[in-house]
Length: 131
Image 1 (tube, helix red, strand yellow):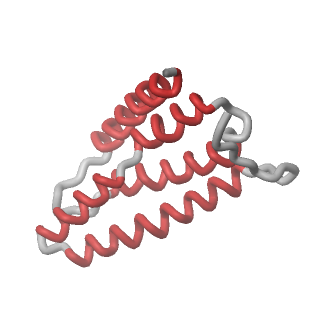
Image 2 (spheres, rainbow, N blue to C red):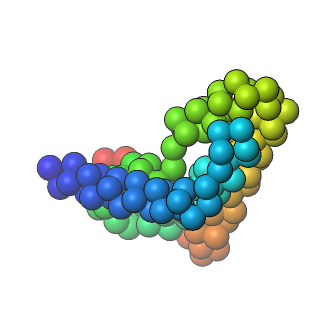
C-alpha cells in the first residue's frame, strides 16, 4: 500500500511539473515539440541518476514513488507519439523524423550521462529487485 501511495503522489507531482513546462514552452501542433523533448531528456537523465545512486539504498516504496511515480508522471511516451502523428499529419514529416531522432539520441545520451554521474567510482552499482 505504501508503494501505491508513493506512485500516486510522485505521479501527481511529475504530471504537474510536466504541465508547467509545457505551459512555459508552448508549441503548435505543426511545430517542433521542444518542451516534450526537454521533458523526456531531463526525465532520462534524472531517472538514470536515481537508479544508479539511490536504488541500492532506498526502500521499494521510495523507488516506486520516484521512478514510475515522479519521473513516469513527468515523462511521457504517448506525448512523443502524438507529436509525431500530428507533425506527420501537418505534412511536417522531416520535422517529425528529426524529432524522433533527437528524442532517441538525446534520451540515450542523457541516460548514459545520468548513470555516469550517479555511479560512484568506489562502488559497483547493484540494483535489488525485491526487498
